[in-house]
Image 1 (cartoon, rainbow over the protein chains, first blue to last red):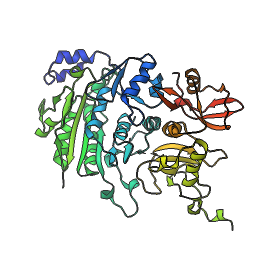
Image 2 (cartoon, rainbow over the protein chains, first blue to last red):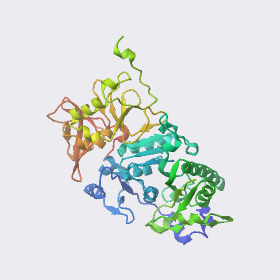
Image 3 (cartoon, rainbow over the protein chains, first blue to last red):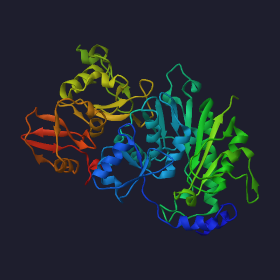
Image 4 (cartoon, chains in turn purple, cyan):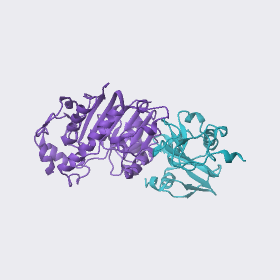
Length: 310
Length: 174
C-alpha cells in the first residue's frame, strides 16, 4: 500500500480508504437486458440456491452469493455477465441511444462494450477497438456469448484510429464520425487492489507517466472522431491524478471539448484541481472519484465530456 | 463457358454482404440471404421477419455472420462484424451455439425439451441416448429457466443419440 501514501492528503478518510483497500471484493454481475430482466436473473440464481443482493444505484447490477457465477445457468445463457460494480459506471454515464454510432476505444475484454450494446437495444453500431490482439479473443467471446450483434471489432492503436474501414468510397471522416465515445483507458489499475492484491507490486511513477502519455493521445483522438455536440466518457480504475485530471487538463487545452457535470447516484468526491505541485483546469471538478471506502466497491474515476463546435 | 467461370473467388480476408438472391450472386459458392432465411424457416420454423433488422456477411469460406449495424460492402480491416451465425459451403449447414442462443427462442420446430439433468450433460459437452420423434439433423435443445424455455445451443440428433455441439470454450459444469 506504500504507493498510496501520496494520496494521504487528498483522500477524505485515509484510514478508512486503506482498510477498504485491504478487504476482498464481492463478485458482481450485470444483467444482459437483451436477454433477460433483473427479476428473471434473480429467479434463475435463486432456483440454483444462490441468494442475490441488488445494488441500490443501478437496476442491472446484482451481487450473487457464489464464488463461481460462471458455472450457473444465468451466465451460461448470457443473461448475466461477471462485471465489477464500478465498471458499470462509464457506460451508464455515456448513455448511448438505440441507432447511434458509438466507439469503445479500449474495449477488451468487452464488459462495457456489451453494456453499451444492451443500452442501445442492439440497434445502431458499436465499434469495439483494442490494440492488444491477445485480449481481442476475450472481447469476441463476450460479444458472442451475450448475443450482441451490433458490434464491429477492430484491432488498431486508438491514438491514431483510422475511420477508413467504415467509409464508402464517397465518404470522408466526418460522414462516419461518432455520436458517443467511451475511453476506458489502460491505466495503472490502483483501484483494482481489492480484486488484484498484487496490483501495486510493480508500481512506479515512471510507469504512471508513460501510461498518462498514451491516455492523452487516445482521448485527443476520441475528440477528433466525435461529432460536434457529441459525448465522450473518460474513465480509469486508478487514483493517480496524472492519469485522470492531468489527462483532462491536457486535452482541454488542445482540443475543442469541455468537461461537464453529471449525476452519479453513488457516494463520490469531485475531481482534484490541485495535486502536489500541479494545478488543473477548474472544469475537472465535474469529474468524479469513487474511492473503495465510499460504497464498498473498487476505485474508479469517470469524466463526461462534450465536444464543442470548432 | 459455365456460369461459375464468370464469378469471383471468395476473399477470406474481408467481410462481404450476402447477395439477396442467386441472381445477385457475384462470388462463387456464396450463400444468399434468401437461402439463409429459408434455411432457418425450414429447419427451425424461425420466421424470416425475425431477421429484418439484420444483414448477413461472409468472411472466411462458408462462415456467415449476422450483424445489426452499418458497414460498407465489402469491409476490410475489421476483426468481427456482429456474431458468427451459420456454417455454409457444406452439405449440411450448421448454426453456431451463439446464434442458437441468440435466435433459438423463435424456433418452433426441431427443438428438444431437456430436463435439468439432461441439460447439464449437454452443456458439459456429453453425448446422450435420448428418444425423440423428430427429423435427424441439427436441433436446438431447450430447458426451463425462470419460467422460460431457453435454448442451450446446437445438438446433432442421429441414431437415437443427442450429440452436444457446444464448443469446448463454452462448455460448463453447471
